[in-house]
Length: 148
Image (cartoon, rainbow, N blue to C red; front, side, top):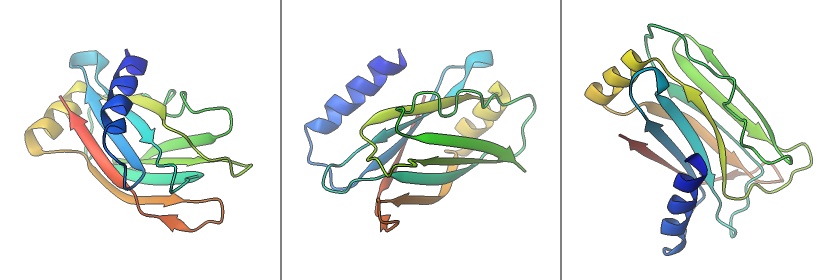
């Protein structure tokens, strides 16, 4: 399903000239299976080799599972995520400075109570978003959010 959603989203974007690389954050599901999925949409004119961002989640009741947060990255890239004081931090990079193409990054399972609060109170707050190229220069990018 995740691959199908990513393919549909990439197809939709391919009909429009991309001005910037995009980080796509999607929340799906309800109850115990709620997930926040992270995808990256490349712009060939602005190659990206690494990115990082933080997402403020706030107070949580229950456990957030981070095991698959970067599970879908290509072999050219590695990543990690952590949760501290209600803030989820993502880091993705390439040891060989390989360009990152359009890809799913991974997903985290979130407590349903947190998801419902964020739906009621607005979107998850995404900040400290940094995209960089092979020379370590920052590249302007967009963050798109899609919440059910």
